[in-house]
Length: 298
Image (tube, rainbow, N blue to C red; front, top):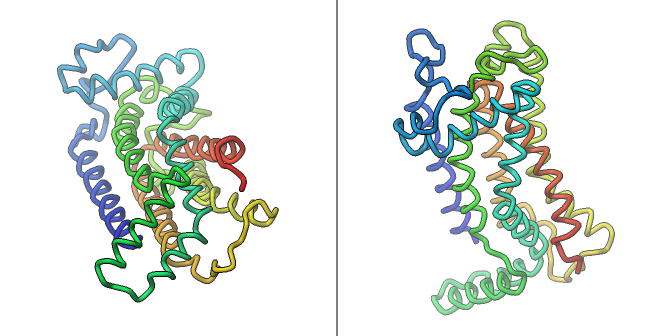
C-alpha cells in the first residue's frame, strides 16, 4: 500500500501545482487596478456565445455558475447565490463523491484484514510473495466492493469545478456589486486582517475547522461503530499499527489538503472560503447519510 499512497501524493501535489498555475494565468482582475476587467464581468445579460468565444471553460463551466449566482442573488443576495450553487454542485457530483466516500470508509473498516495480509508477507521481498500479497489485497477490495483509486477520479472531477467557482465568484455581477450580510465577498481574509475586519477572518477560520471535521468525520464514525460493537475486532489487529500504513497515508493527505486550502483561501476572495465552508458542511451531512444507508454494519 505504500507505493499507492506515494503515487497518490505525487498526483495530489501535481494537481496543486497545475491549479495554482492555471489560477495565476487566468486571473480576471486587471493587473494595474486590481479590479475585475469590464470584459470579464458576467451579468444576466451576458450571452453564452460571448463566453464561448473566450474558450470552452468560460462558456461551459464559468458562465453557467456565474449566471446561477446572479439569478439567485436577484431574489436574495450574493451569499445565498453561492450557497445554492455549492449545494447544486454537491448534488451534481454526489454519484461520484458518495462512491469515493463509501470506499474510503470501507477501507478503514477492513484495516484489520489488511494488517493481517501485510503481516503475513512481512519481510518477504521475492517476486512470488509480492504477487501473492497483491492478489490477496485485490481479492479483499473485490469482497468489499472497494475501488482504492476512486478518490482520484473525484479529485479530477472537482478540479475544474473549483476553478469554475473561483472564476465565477469573482466575475458574477451579483458578487462584484453586491454583498452578503454586509460583507464584500470580493475581499480576501488577508485584506480582512490588514483592515481589522475580523468577520472575514472568522469565515476563514470556520472554513478550516469544518474542512478538518469533514475529513476526520469518517474516522470518528468508524471509532463509534467499534465502540458500539458493530465492528468485530480481529485477534491479529494491532491498534499500534493504525498510525502507519493506510491510515497514516490518509491522515497525511487530509492535513495536506487542509494546508493547501488554507494557503489558497488566505489570498483568494472570501467567496471561495464561503464556498469551501458550505461544501464541508454538506460533506459532513453526506457522511452521516452514507454511514446510515450505504455502510454495512458487520
